Length: 268
Image (cartoon, rainbow, N blue to C red; front, side):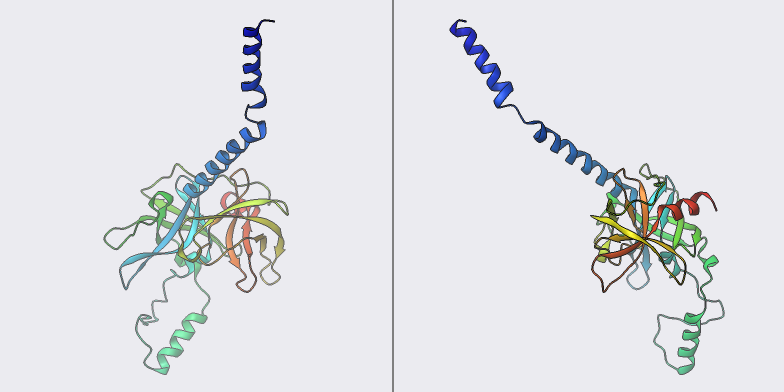
């Protein structure tokens, strides 16, 4: 072997052998890129629900939701309860101070009445998508709108249909309820911080004795503003809708699971 041939062999081994990029280093960026794509998909499939504040005429964020088709948004039923109209004979303006005992008694009677959930049907709510993050909406500059078309009292689910808007970003529903220890992805708006992404794990399955409602018990930093938002599995499928959390217990949250979601959407 002459010197020239030996020199060429040396440099081939040097470049493609000891100094080539190890396989594990090559895989990590690909995995990271895949996860970032998933997060982006989930953020774009989620919405921030908003209502008009009559004092400053601006739309304020109050709940989250998830596109389950191009024109259907799934959220929690309790997110719509505040929009149930008062009884027509109440004659009470709740924006004014209470001036008599009679008014106080009348308000307490109204509050203690069982809500008429049917009055939610047709109520319109504002919403914005991920590409509108930090944008402000007012009475003059209205957001996208959707109307309530269906609800499930027991399982705390609510369905809205968009008005003159269709999304290209929506998710499918997982067929199973998940497994304990499974990692999940969560999108919500805790404390009004829009489209916050974080992760959690499935901690267990709970049946509430009083209502017999089934919950997906999740360990994740849920707070007000997450209600109605989605929890998603590693494939990006919807595994739960945020329903409640324990404020006195760190990271203890409860989601309506995919089994109840599938029944609500497809079997009723």
